[in-house]
Length: 99
Image (cartoon, rainbow, N blue to C red; front, side):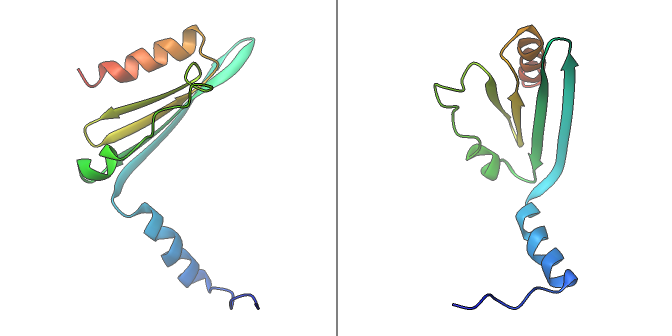
């Protein structure tokens, strides 16, 4: 089967923007800690709570101590790290926003 005709820049942009439909905002942060991997936070704010209710799946048992998923209304946050003190403080801070 031959490859498809390459998309123009405009068509490629339109295609990629479809992945962002329903997302109002995005957030990324990295917290550096000496002698340990960084703690990363990625979050999305959806236009409505419906898409957020489907995200994220529960972390697997293998990753549960170093990945946290938090849902607060229309916001979904992912926290990645080593499971150490910095990770726990960042996770607690984010979870507190929903209280």
